[in-house]
Length: 77
Image (cartoon, rainbow, N blue to C red):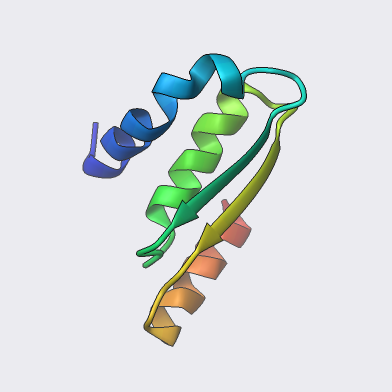
């Protein structure tokens, strides 16, 4: 398990019961967006645990080039 997977597990697993409800709306914010590694793994974890949930991903990145790579990663994941 990598560092990103560990972070996702630490952030989301304690709320697994709440996140697995049918009407769950989940927002995930990454203040250091980078190449969107955390957000893509969080989205994968949430969809595996509740495919019916509504997912909203947000992030912030200072470097425009890195933010572009991150947005591309989110589109293809």
